[in-house]
Image (tube, one colour):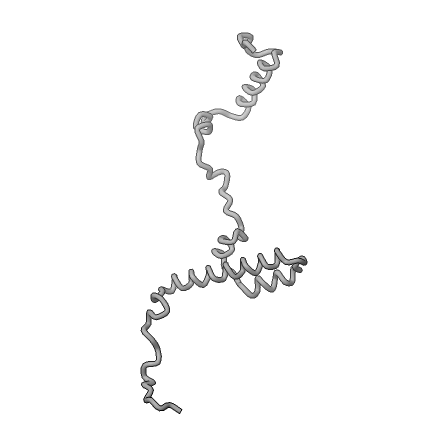
Length: 127
């Protein structure tokens, strides 16, 4: 069959023949991105089909392309990041009202309403 001698000790090409050597983190990231794209394409296929997809078909896609939390976040499927209200960055308005309480604020608003309606409040208002 083989007329020419074949060196079987060198069957592979150079190590970087198919691209640069990747670290484990780079390879995992690349694999996650491939899974995200494939999952997205399958879901797009099910959403753009002529007939509606059943929940079983959508579950099959999720089983076929398992996604981790980062992949869910990339697709916008994961839980959204909701910052707690108590950890909010103070605005200029918050800085002005640092020592006020809610009752005095509500009384000031009532006075402003009365002044606008003309039934009380400041008599010096032009409008």
